[in-house]
Length: 208
Image (spheres, one colour):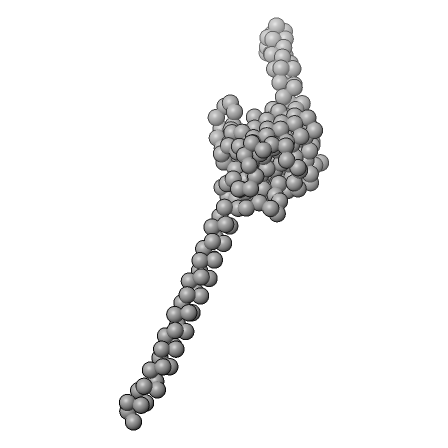
């Protein structure tokens, strides 16, 4: 049997540990309750700025060391995740006014610059300049939105119809050149057929 002093010491240690961990336990509890009712999982260690807006929040995950600036917008299915178990900064930082489209994943301890936009279902694994728009897997900068041009108008789902994807531009160029080549080939075939038609009467005259 433990002495009264030993029991008192054990009880003090248990209560002290519980009190010390109470803020963390409370944060976890609130996070789990919020996830149950909303489908949004925000780690209590994340830093979130003012006027943060979540639209259709189901499936959003925000990691422990993520930092979100003011006036940011996230759509459903967004993940601000890490790529390692190392202690310290593991999750992304979003500057002010960043918009992240539905299903996008931003993975790693880098910065998405102020006013940047991440297109739906993109996977971002490296830093994004301020004001830029990125799309694709892995995400790439889309031309037509100048880097550093922060503060542009809000765009739903982080995409607009006037952006010029460099890969699409290359494909369009290749398609245009293919059409030109086909036209040249058709012209050559037509000339050969014309020459062949001219030679036919000559063969008949020679044989007669």
